[in-house]
Length: 514
Ligand code: NG6
Ligand code: CA
Image (cartoon, rainbow, N blue to C red; front, side):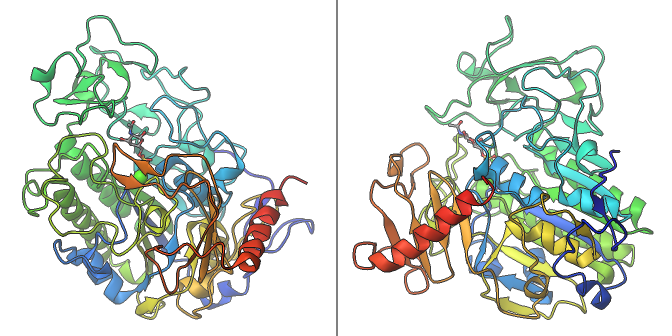
């Protein structure tokens, strides 16, 4: 494990260290709670019953929200996974870099070892740290050069995680194996693994040529999930080998939940930080038979039930160990919802009047609110006063907020975009951020009342996923507080306001270029 010289805990260290804004908070919460961060995949603002879903029921999340604080104006930094998770873990805006787009399964580490993460913070504070589930932040040094038959390094260990059990990218991308502490779990020496995103392996059947092998799910036309076939589902990318290490999609939630529960059991006696990234409700959706066809909404709805089950299992494990009271749980989603994202799983046909995006416009990939306004629940029994908060909050603040919780100090270059929001996240104030910045086809800035979407040349509508992208060649300005469905573009009527937001955004963009 690397030691980050500039990252020190509890105020020890040379005077050049910039004190964290809320070191004082530590005095309030001195007993070092465990922190569990649950990040759902593509779960929409309207997908949970506590956020108004009527057609699907999520009792475990609802219970968490009932005992904690449910935020109605929470935002991820980006409308897809890699840039969203990058910012969540680093406190650095992914849009400041040009290499944080959706990562392939053979991408090198997007967060480089020298960069600080929230896991480093916990690690340096003496916590044991774990990451379980969806990763999608690259593994190894350089894209396409990993040897999947050995230890892939650098990896999560180099950015603060003592333990990891991860899928490299997404369920729809090869390699379809679990990486446990940077080695293929359940490795099968009789089936060495090769991965390529450039060319197929001779003799390996592909989804596009062998529909008869697609026993679980077929790809939707034109999305491109028709390459390597792994256990009855074709994926993006090419893969050979794997044998008994290959995952079965119906067991993904069980596997990652078991590892999360094991971690909690193992580490219950010392403070820990656990990141749980569920595969639900990302495609391919093929939930366990306990959930399949149970929601009435197709596999997407079933995957929501499965997600809720995972949340319940994690909470139950904490309760069993007697540490629920001393655990801060954060639950959110990496980006907004999509119904058909590449597989013919009948989620479109069976959606009925369920609205994954709630009353928001757009969805995953979109500059409109449904792309980046996400569920966000904070629970810490006895510490967080139960309720609902409409404070403006963002994933970007996880780093500084956790630093405040821990009383950690860190030098200014770490997490430059992150601000301490501990009082807001714990419900001690309803004052949130002055504004948030969101990235999809282009950047938007939203101050809790007005939102400005910068013009761009992208297509206004994504035909494949049936999502309004929010892209426009014109400036767009919406009065979100009155019109959160972004129906009326008020840009031409409010040039002053628009200029103010544009100037603020420009200022942010220049901030780190000095
Ligand atoms: C897209 C994929 C989509 C999904 C997404 C990543 C196509 C046409 N679509 O490029 O299926 O994998 O990437 O989703 O390739 S995310 O939530 O992990 O960002
Ligand atoms: Ca996602």
